[in-house]
Image 1 (cartoon, helix red, strand yellow):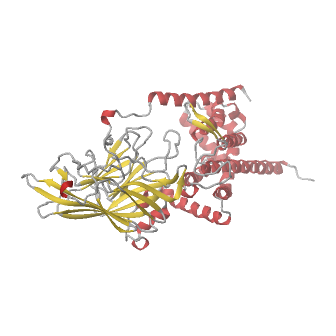
Image 2 (tube, helix red, strand yellow; image 1 turned 45 degrees about the vertical axis):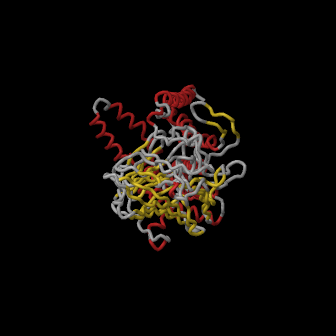
Length: 591
């Protein structure tokens, strides 16, 4: 290997390592000061989750427009004396409830697993931070933590209720019953949560500041992930407002607030989503990644309901907790396709797509699913689809290669013109245009075929990086057990500094080798061989992509590797075809 080539490779590695070092030094992971963290209070040390002592009535909210107090337990003999847990289980989910606030403390998806078992969608729940807790006020107020009465309505429906009093401005009191009722269906990932305020005749509604109540989701949704290492996993917040989707990418330790009222709001990872869709909309949403504990990362929503103006009111929230797939989410766009008769909900807009290239991605999905029916292995489907795409693109690849070769032939004359008119750019452009016309060459002929391929490449990249069916799909036992994750042949037991590499992966190494071979075969001969910048691109870029793709999903790397290998084979064939045709032209005819 030449000296300049070695220098190019060394410089590439130095740039990558230095880049990571500088980034970590200048932009360390954000840590919100404790004084600014919006953390919920820790449980009282004298209070036990399963305490048998009499109920202590808490003052659940700080005074806003009107103070709220829980009904005196001495006057409500029917109130439970201790916390109890209840379970509803369907074919798809297992939900565990507590009579403290009538909240959910566990929500598992039975048909989807993670390294810890069934995927837990109410993760990092604590005694004072649970899923679907209610706050009588805005998100800055402590959520209700009183014990509620429980009514088992059916095997798939459960109700919680408790009496409260509100002090009016004239010193009088008004009473109301707060009710939460959960109803599930056997074969649907969506459930119904009804929140009822049933007040006496003197109650004129509920208003604390500019909200009636705020519902909070679980501290985090599953499956668990390491934000520093699992760079291809994420947590994003979505909302629908006035028919338009908006995405909030909130950094760890930070929070953001919606500017307008919205139809629904959701938090989603790469493969699963939690979406809250109330019948009367959401007044305001706060999207929080603040946890106060680095080992318990947060992705939590606080959804505020507008003030209630009547003494009796029932809100119906439709809550979707399940796979982030078109199949499950699109059915809520047509009333006849879902049991709740929802229409045009647009919940499927949380699914990662290629934007305007979405139809192309759908076509690729259809083809890949067809191949899967023939050979039920998603890894094989990726390879077959990649082969098909390279065959379809072969004419464009050939055209680009021919144009490149033509450019090489014209290079001496081009350089001559450039040297001759180097001090007169306008004249140089005129002479170049004349020369191209005389030679019958279009400078864009080599670029256009590549540009036409880009939409397909982008669509395939998004598909292989986010396709739900790859989750848990095995390709090669013992090596690639899950196409949605990186392969692993050895665990180091520690993480390498700067690059966050904790496992030895083979696919990224194969990818780099294939990319180097591809660059070697397709490199431009002649003058460009002496071009150091070209060598930097040819040898340095694969090393940079090695670090970028090191923790990439196996399915994505399989696509890149086989695409490189097939393109390399195509290039060899094209080179032989071109050189063969040249030789046939120069052979003198026999006399």
